[in-house]
Amino acid sequence: MTDLPGYPSRRSFLKASAAGVAIAGVAGTAQAEATPQAIPLEAYEPAYFTPEEWQFILAATARLIPSEGNGPGAIETRVPVFIDLQLADDYGRADDWYMMGPHDPTAGADRGWQTPLNPAQLYRQAIPAFNAWCEAQYGKAFAVLDPAQQDAALTALQKGDADLGDELRIFFATLLANTKEGYFADPMYGGNHGMQAWVYIGFPGARAAYREWPTRHNIKYPLGPVSIKGERA
Image (cartoon, rainbow, N blue to C red; front, side):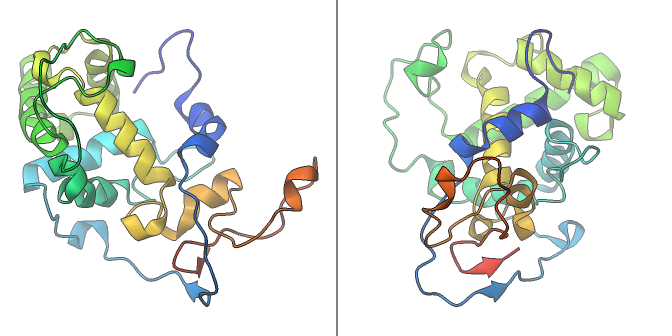
């Protein structure tokens, strides 16, 4: 996706804002474990997404955090798996959210979730609607567009030029937020495979104690990250 004028680049933003997104925790006394081998994405069977939706998620997240660059991309860190598992669980159902109306699609992000659809319903309805827009514009569904067309389509969705209707207006913001969450989350949730994103930004993960390090300026932290389950990168 093309970066908008006046805004930082996606990769710079991800690295600069990671501290506010990464999930920390306490490893306790659990013995460190090696990172388990994950099922290849081509062999992964989604818990929520249909095959068509899965192809969209693979393609969209790959453009939001591309593989080219200094750090790992969404595909390498298995962001699509994170989103799939989240939508199949209580997040997707909005189990503990207040979902009663009225809903104002013009309200800002500080006004909360402004659609009667839960996240799983939002994805289910927005993906075919966006694919239909892509087919009208380019003659193809999003997943089979070339990268430049995919970037242009996502930019149109971000800016509101690809209008999917009031109930789906927050789809791009939700997709981007979930992509970043999957990139920086603890690997136990399906994304950030091998803690690659944590290694990239120098985040120590869920280490039990590193209180002496915040006062050491301009000194690189020498240890790799540890997951909540005690896995080491």
